[in-house]
Length: 77
Image 1: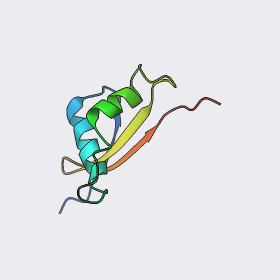
Image 2: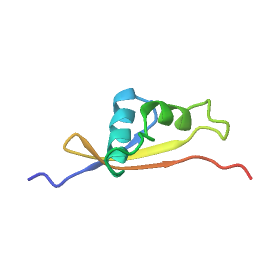
Image 3: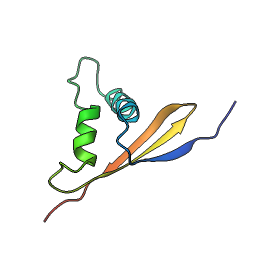
Image 4: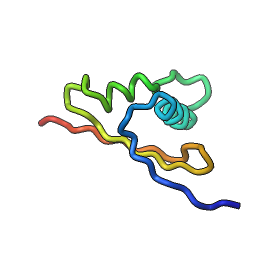
């Protein structure tokens, strides 16, 4: 059994990675709950159209599947 996993910095706004991250996060919500996570949301949050500035995202990957997600955006005071 392979117990290794890797951390990937998401900096290219690759649709496949963003979709996987959204599905991973959505899986923690109760069944039937509104889809609040999407690739389009992450493109906005991490991209140049976010009024607070570009965000940062890191994913943990094991066996080709995302097993963890973290993202950070700047906040203006």
